[in-house]
Length: 381
Ligand SMILES: C[S@@+](CC[C@H](N)C(=O)[O-])C[C@H]1O[C@@H](n2cnc3c(N)ncnc32)[C@H](O)[C@@H]1O
Image (tube, rainbow, N blue to C red; front, side):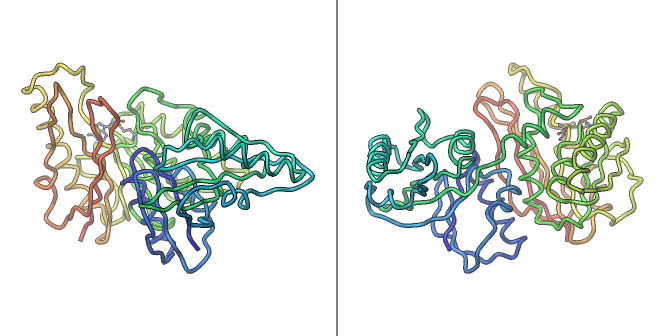
C-alpha cells in the first residue's frame, strides 16, 4: 500500500513528526519519495489514515496513492472519480509540485461523466492545491473525490484524499478555551502537538512542561491521549490560566469518556523542584524566550538578553537532569534573534549536562519574525 501526506509550511518538521508517529505505532514503511509539499511511503500492512492524521500536527491531507502515470490525461483521472447515480458527485483536483491548470481536465471529466448520466460537480478554486476547508466542506463531507497529483521526478503519482486536518477542532481547542491567549507569537497548538510527537513517548508516560504558560502543550498532550500531565510556571496568573483551561478541557472531553490527571503548581524552573527525582518520562516546553523585541535593539542589548537566557536554561537543564528518568527526552524551543539583518544564536551545547545529547534540531519561523524558534530534541543517558 502506498500512502501520501501533504505537508504544512515546515516540511522537515512535518516529515520528522510522521516518521516519529509511524515508529511509535510500530508501522514498518519505506520512503517512496519526498518533496517540500508531500511525503510518500509504502507499507506492507494497511494503516488507519484517519487515526494517524488526527494525531499529526504538521500534515494537511492524507490519502492513498492509486496510480503512477507519466503524463496527466483525462481518462487516467476519470476512473478514479467515485460516482453514484442517485446523488450529485463532487470532485476536485489538486496539484503538488506542479503548476498545471487542472480546470480544463476537470471540466472535461465532468462533461464525460455527465454524458454517461451522472450528476457531477467539479469543485474549483483560485487556490491550487485546494484548501483543507474546501476539500472537507465541498468534497469529503459529500462523499466525493479529491485527486492529488504529486509530481515526483518525471512521473505523477495520483493520490486519493482520505482525510484532511480537522481545522474546526484546532480552532475550538485554541479559541474557545476560557484563557485563549490570542496574542501574536503564542505557541500554536499544532506546533505543540508536533513537539509532543517528536518525543516518541507512550500515552502512559508522564509529560512535564516547566514553563506551561496557559497550558497549550499540556492540552495537546491530553488530546493525544496522555493520561498524566504536569505543569508549572513561575507566574501565578499563568498557573491560574492553565488550571482553568484544563478544567474546561476535562468538561469538554467528558462525553468522549476521556479522563486525565493533572498536577499544576507555581515554581521557578531553574530552582530545586518539589517533584520527585527521576519521576518524569519527558519534558516538552517552550521556555521564557526573553523580553518582547521592538526590532531596533542594540547588539549589546541582545547579547545581554542572551546571557540571561543562557543562565536560565543552564540552571533549568540541571533541574531537568534530576527530574528525568535515565531514558528521558526533552523537546524544547531555544530562540535565535533576528535583529537589524543579523541573527544571534544561543549555543545550547555548552549549557547541557554531560549526559545530555542533542539528537536533532529543526527551525520553525515565519518571514520577518524577530524571534526564531529552534526545536531541540535532547536525550538523557
Ligand atoms: C513563552 S511562554 C510559554 C507559553 C506556553 N508554551 C503556552 O502555550 O502558553 C514562557 C512562560 O515561562 C514563564 N516563565 C518565565 N520565567 C520562568 C521561570 N524562571 N520558571 C518558570 N516559568 C517561567 C512565563 O511566565 C511564561 O508563562
